Every structure is written in C-alpha cells, then in structure tokens.
Image (cartoon, rainbow, N blue to C red; front, top):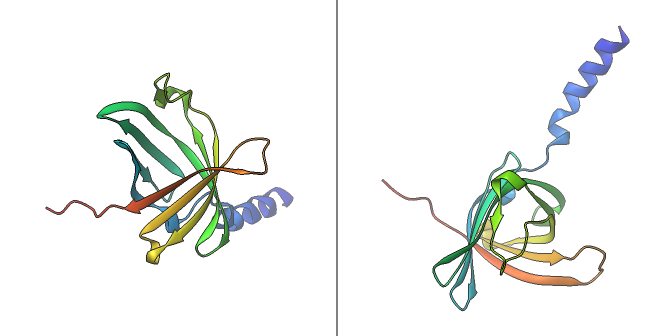
Length: 138
C-alpha cells in the first residue's frame, strides 16, 4: 500500500524534477572573434552538443547533459557536464570539464549570454554571446 503511494507521488513530481526546459533550447552560435566560433545545439530534454572552431580547425567537439536552474523567465544557471566518451578536445582547448554558467536570454529568446563561473571562485570568467540560428529551410 505505502509502496504504491510512494510510486504515485514520485510519478506526480516527475515534471517538477525536469533538468531543463525549452527556454534555452535551440541551435546557438557565438562568434568569439579572431576566427573562433562556438556552435551549440541545446535540447529541451537536457542534452547538448557543441563544437569550437578556430581558424577552420576544430579545437573541441563535446556532448553531454546540462542542468538548468531558472532564476526567472529569462535568467538562471546552466551546468554543462560533458560525456567523456562523446567529447574530444585539442591540447590548446584543454580537457572537457563541467562548466557552470550564469545565463541571460535577451531579444525575445534570440540571444543567450553565458558568463562562466570558475570552480572555487566567486568571480565570473568568460562571457560568451550566442545568437539563435534559424533552422534550414527546404
């Protein structure tokens, strides 16, 4: 009896336990200047992939999961966790590692600013501005 109630309660809470939602989902691209680009696909189900390119050379290809903690409708925290077997990076890029970013959506969800928080530090690190890419037509 108690087992059924516990299972029913757990199933009722499943939507509340979601790791992500559609607010940050999409195909994003950041132009970092000096021939460096990051292309990122963020799925509403909590998975993401990215590729970092500099001067037409792939520096990193990553894939994994992310967790979203919303502060409000347009901001919060994203924690990207690469899957080692699906992530590769050059020596210049550095090994794939968990990244915690403060995010802000702007321009009606067409722009995404990520500010990296480095582990063990209260100061912010890199700021990256991504723009949502239009899906290919045809």
